[in-house]
Image (cartoon, rainbow over all chains, first blue to last red; front, side, top):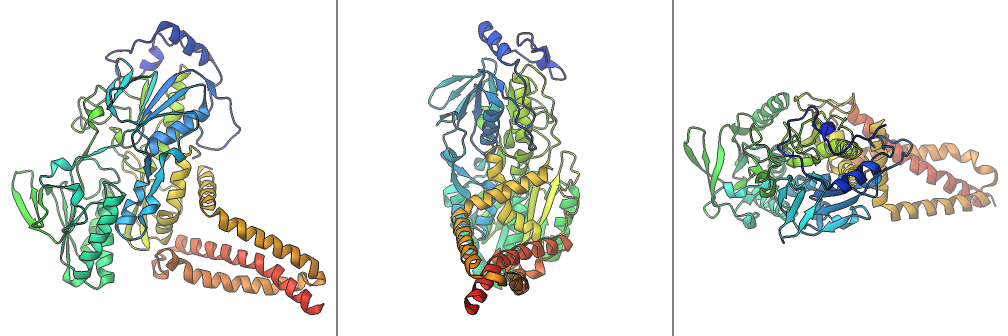
Length: 458
Length: 114
């Protein structure tokens, strides 16, 4: 296998948009990296097999973010590469199992089950910069942290996750979650815990619950639905269902992006007595008065009183990505500032030495842990291919999974791809079937699976 | 193949989370096995059937109790996959019961005869 010269970059440009600028690399360093990349390449590690030789390289790889995607890719790269300098940049020391937030927020799990330490999962030998990336300069191959530290890289993995844009909701105060019927499962373990406390207070009395859904892409798009299902179940078990009303306000024309699932959920909610209104975006909230203001596309506003409200914030890319050259400049992902990656290879479309993993990617679907589970091996493999002087050659199909809880003790195991086709992993799984097995997976098996992904083993 | 590897890793991570309990159980079982081996004599084979009966009874109880232990109920068994998973888990619990009951019964039988 002939090492392709790093210098002409043609191997990186095939099937990609013409880069706006190829980052200049020191010629001596380039020759050194080419020589090191001539070693045999390790195959993708998605299945067990005989160990293959790691690629020898002195490449400097920066991973921005230490969530599931960042750490999973770091662990895989540390196995696939011999000699690379891997730097993880993230201020967070606590690692949160975010798929467990809905279980905490609905009283199924204690909060400590979603709290771990990043230090326990980062691979040995990586440098951990405990700071946040403030800006990306892909032309100069550098990132700058919030404290002003400038870090150069040869390759970059963007794993920053999303920014929860609560600021789009006038009057919203994240610190007030848990008080005056204000809930939100998204911000943190503490918010999830406070949400459960508020839910308990609400179900003891009953009343009007307002559940919201914004128009932006979401991480875990099923969470607003799970919260609605579980709230209804908790009201039923508390005996206050008859004294209550749940109103789901969607800013979209649906409640879920996969039509067959959307239609199934709406049918269930009709039976369960959950009202749905569409094209209703939450614009403002008066926490003390317990009143929410929704707007329609025509500009009409509607005030709605509530006894409990579940606020789902609009999301976008963090400022560091949104304001950089890495973000989509046109198309449906531009408004959110999402990372401009090829949806198949997850390689940046204009900067070939940059890859994206997780929620930050501007792709048609897939802001879930399950997406990272399936794409982390691919990103690591494709990055190693590029380091070795070849093309990214594995393609991602957009796999996403959502164990959609329908009540305590039962869930639907929804799995789908970029095209919205249901793609169950096991042939006997019926995706739209209420299932004990799906619930068992959610409460007992998915976190161990997540941990294995973190460690780079699956 | 991927699903098998994933399942093995899930089991491994669950085991890592409860390793003190697993270790204590394994040591207890080995101690029981060793003690029974010295005293059971000819009574090992005679106690297979009683051990299996105990295992089956434990499996039945496990099938009834397992759903509740994770916040679910028997009425949440939606289709054959759910029943299959429940019965498989109950059978596993029953198997553990057999693994402990057999040497225990054999040891007691041997002591009674001595």
